[in-house]
Length: 605
Image 1: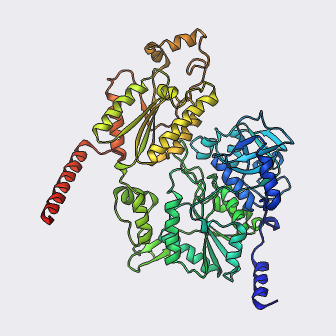
Image 2: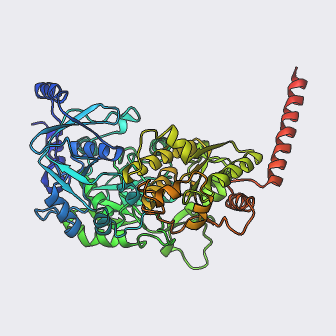
Image 3: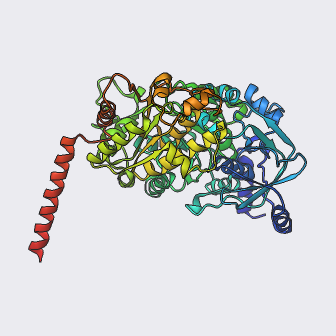
């Protein structure tokens, strides 16, 4: 054996082992794969959601080792109640496969798992089908049942059963972006081994890396004398996060120009985050061990989803750090606490806040300041705060707030006045220079949701279709007004998550039931009272009032135009809409600029 081979073998032995000893690999190859592909084409199929696609991919390549399947009931129950698998192995997050309807799923039979585009991914031999409870899972795993939590809002659409069984994976989900950075745990381990470093610090991120993050990651790697694994999540993150295409372009520029290539590895992780705070921090540490890391950076409010319905954070700032510290020996990964770092302008350097001498001048920028004072106003980020390459990349996707998209979502009983107010608001928005799309509940039922009934499942499907359309329009900086009864909080909150909480304005048209009945020109309430209509909202089906809507409107004791103008004033106060005065000034400025440009062109010719 030559010296190089001996050294490689030594590194393999020194690098931390995968969690529970070995990496799972569910991929089938060769002749077996060909035969199973033919077999799969004769099987009933289940199309996976984007979340389940991420989970299947990471199960397949060993990211979730020691798991080799979606959890069965015993493991699922143990994870919920004890943060462990049924055999006692620490594992904090349930990895499950939910299904809508189980009529065609038979125990002991094979089931083809496919992508939303019907691409074949895997075959599952179904061994278990079991029911689950949203409230129980949310309470035990997330520590809350508040539907403002983005995962809880999503869970309402998952279906009432989970299925489990052995997996034979024929194809991984296809990715065409940043292919060179999409490495399996085995590939990352091989890359790290080539650096001749046995200590590895992993950095999880779903946000752009700014100056303080760069400084801390470099310090952490130097602290342990090891390699740095920059491991951003590019699967499902928090709604409203910067898209991964933008983030990865920035990561690549930073690693190429400012990190030491001899000690730094950038690799992408197609993980579907749960935003589960403390439990998620432990999960992320286990995942990074499988990629070869024996140190893991954890900051304040790691994997936190923001604030709940009452405006309070779901988790304390150090809850995640504290839980991981408790399980650190079992996970086998040492936590490095991300300390608060500030910039010292007089010394042109960053320093940990607790090390700064009293009286020293410091500057900081919060995420809110970055968004509201810089990006939303088209202003350049300070050079001390972020690298110019990152600032330039973010500037390309950052419009001033008044040019960004938003969704106005009217909810309330039938006859409350939603459509009338929505129509007036649309006119006023166009008066202010915004182009507006209006989705009215009755119109949607005629076109987008034709064929759906009025069961809870069909009503949720109808609302989520509206939410999807709204999210696409807002993503492309459009304005959309949705006016639908939308009786259930969970569905409304999932729409909020899809659109982004900062771009979703929920308006509760709070009109008493008796007033709605008096206004009922179609006679729908009367039919419901006589029993001719079943499941009519407000009569024999529940309407769940919003707990904390952005705006609550009364439609009695006021003029019809009062409520629309209240909404317009709210949008102006939020910066989502310019006042008429500012709009005219910008229009005049634009005319002046065009005139100047035309004069310059004329002088050239």
